[in-house]
Length: 370
Image (cartoon, rainbow, N blue to C red; front, top):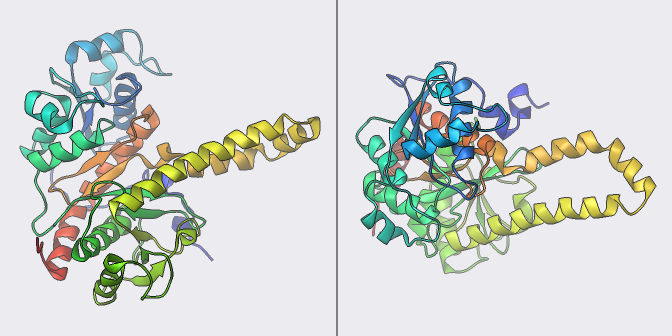
């Protein structure tokens, strides 16, 4: 029988208290200027995260001070937060005069906008003025900025983006989902090690099962990269369960699914489209007859719970594992709820010292051979 802890959804686990030995206050920076929906969700999400902190962490909002205060003056979010709510809930405001738009080339933007909210926030972490960074801005700019400002954990060949995917048994971590399109076997091994550390300490899975995504379960299946990675994983000491196929992801066969960034990104985008199609189809079919509407009314509570399990907002954002800091990349369409939960993900990464565990595992498996 599943324990109460095992029955918790990944989103619910983010709100569980963490016993940790981290010394001093944990400060999480939120990029106020990022995302497709304007600055309001970032401000509201930061305040909401600070409101429920209960002394566990502090929130820093980085962005154009005038724009933020102007937005607050109009009342942000359902709670209609005002400027005084920043001080009330302990949110610190740090000014950044520039922002990076989604359409800008990351390298040029970072070179020309040294005072952007992304670089200011990441520099705060580099300078030990913060322990985590959350942004729903350009993935390329956040990745490049993190590598420029924070660097890599010693021995890590390539940082990887780890995305949460709901499954029949709670959920799994897929990595990489877009940071590295061409990979080498030892990099895939490192992805498995980093994903295992994240899954173990952030989502409370003591012995996460690692699966290598392939076109068949047999060790001989797959391309050269997959076959060589398979052997490294067999010899690694990780809880490697072998190759898994695409159908096994949503079944929850593995807790950590390893693949290169090209395949991972395709899976992620496809999954998002399936969810939209599924709920769109339900709405169309419901209105076909009065009986369908009555049936939908009866199962509405179950559909709500199901929708919550599939909602990316419940899981906050995707960590960029392997950089020498904590960097959470959120969906461009992130709402206040997603930003709030991303802060919780960042907090748990810091509190559980995930980077230290990654550093130890990388040393155990061998350093970067590039």
